[in-house]
Length: 602
Image 1: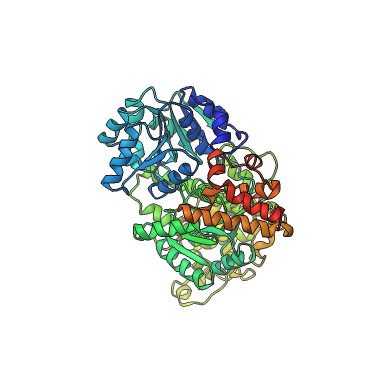
Image 2: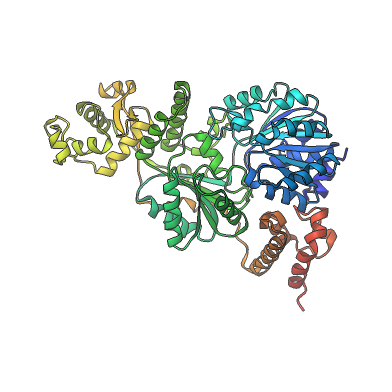
C-alpha cells in the first residue's frame, strides 16, 4: 500500500485533507465500508480515489453518469492515474481493450454504469480481477421516494453478496435521515461507518422571489450580475426549456437547451460546450446536472418551483463548487403549485408515494414563504443546525416586511367558501375586487356577500395572499386541471376570529440585484489582470490540445494560487495548491514560462 497523504500531495497536488476526508480514506484503506453524505464541492471523489490508489487492485466506481465518464476518466489520466470506463458508448473493440487492460492489472480505476455492472458477464469479469474497492456514486439514486431514482441501483446489493470482503463506499450530496436509511438497507451497508458532513454551502447566496414578469427578472439578474458567467437555468417542461434558450440567445447570451427529449448526440454536444467553453448558460430540465463537476458555475436559476427541498438543494449545489461566491435564484408563483399538484395527481405512483411527494412540495413551499433565514431552514430540513442567521440569503440581507393580514385573509377564505370551493385564485380575486366580468356575473357571484369586499387591495396583492395561504396550509389546490382552491381544517380558527395571521409583503419593485451588496468578492486586482488572462489563455490552449475541459488542466483556485505565489521554478510550482508531480511534468513548464515573462520582462 502507498501512504494516503503521499498520494494526496504528489498525485492530486494538495497539502492537506479537508473535513472528514482522512477518516473516510483511512476507514476504506483498512477494509471497512462507508456511507458518505457530503455537500457538492466537498471533495467526495478523493474519498474513494485515494483508497483505490493506496490499496492493491483496481477501484471500481459505479456511476449513472454515462455522458460524463469520458471527462472523469480523462481528468484522472491527466493526473497520471490509469483509468478507464465501461458503458454503452464504447464499440466492441474498445470494450475488449478495456477488459484486457483490467484483467492484466493495467487499470487503477474503472468507471462502470450500474446497468452494465449487474450483468453476469461483468460480474464474472470482476471476479477474475483483484478489486481494491467498490464506490457507489450518487447513492441517493437507490431511494425510491427520491427525485433521481434509478431502478438499476436496487440490484447493487449483489456486490455485498458476491464480493463480501471488498470494501464499499456509497456517496451522495443529498440524503435526509429517511434516504440514508434506505441507502443502508438496499445496499446492505448495515456495518458501514456513516460520515455525515455539514450540508452548508456558505458561498451560495439563496434568493427566492415571486414571479413578476419572470423573463425580465431573469434578464435583469443576468445583465446586472452575471453578464459573462457560466450558469444553469432550470425549467419544469421541455417546451419551456427550448423557448427560454431561444429567447436568451436572442438577447445575446450563449444559451443551450438540454432535456431528455433531445437527441443524445445533441445533448452530449451541449454538455461538452458547457463544460469546456466560458460564459455558457445551460437551460435545462432536471435531466441535466447530476455529477457535473464544472467548478466555476456562478449561478443556478429556477424559473419554476422545484418539487422538493432535496431537488432544490441538489440543483443549487451545482453552483460555486470552487468555493467562490455563487447565487441561487428561484422565481415561483401559485401557478407552479397548481402545475406540480397536477403532475403528482397524474403520476403512476401509489397513494403513499403521492402523499410523500405532497409533503415534500409543502416543505418546499414553506421554504419559499418564510420570513427568517433561508439557510437555517434549509439546513434544518436535513437535520443540520446553523446557530445564527447566515447573513447571505435574501431574507438576511433585505428582511421582508410583514403585516397583520388577518382581516384580508378572512375575506379571502370566506370568498373561497361562498363561491363553492370550485374556482381558482383568479376567479376568487375577481369576486373580491368586485369584477363584473361575464364569468363572475354568469355564475351569480356578483350577488354574493363577498363580492367587492376586497377592493382596497390590488390583484397582485391578492395573488400574494392566496399563494401564502396555500404555502401555509390554510388553502389547498385541487389538482383538477383548474387549480381549484379549497379550505382546509386549519383555516377554522382564523374564520372564527380565534387566531391572527401575519403575511410577508411582496416587494416586486425591488431590483433583484439589491441583495448582493454585501457579497464577498474575489475579483482579480487590476495590476494582476494581464497575468491572470495570460494564465487562463495558457490553460485554454492546453485544454484544447488535450481534449479536456479547462478546469481539468488546472481550476481557477490553482490559477489564483499561481497568481499569488508567482512561482518561477519547478520546486516552487509544486507548492501551488492543485499541482502534483504529473501535472508539474506535463503542464508546469508552460505556466512557469508565462509567469517568468511577467516577472522578468525582456
